[in-house]
Amino acid sequence: MRNLKSSKKPTRNPNSQLSRLESIHKLINGRAFQPSLVEEKLSQINTSYLTPYCLVYFKYLNVRHHFNYYRAEGALEHLELSMGLLNEMDQTAYKLKVRISNDEYHFTRAYVRFTVSFHSEDEYDTQFIISKVKHITDNALRINPKDSKFKWLKNQLAA
Image (cartoon, rainbow, N blue to C red; front, side):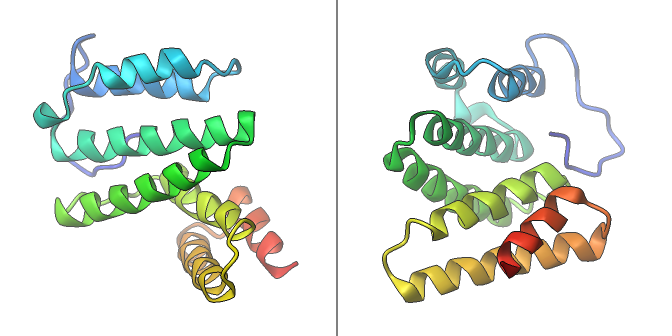
């Protein structure tokens, strides 16, 4: 997930921060669900040494990991954890002025919230979450009107 606009190319040696995070990303996106391996790899990362971009990326990977865990196991605590981590990731990106321009990141933000809305027991909370999903979806479609994931999500919201 490369999402910074920078004239300087990041290093690509196997021990670089970004390379390690990208290898974890491949594990998370892999066909076989391997939660213990992903957790082990994530726990080996010392966040105090990460660049602002890599810190946001690390938090994104944690969101994806727990959301995949929820999808595989159906455990609501992982969905709640992914939502909390998502909010923390957004705050970190804002605080550190990391500009996100990756559709995958924005779709994850919208889809996790969309999924949480089905499990919310508070009607006001559900409406608030859905309004955030609509806002993210509308912004994404304004930038890229042909994005099939966001078109699908918009149709789900309309249903």
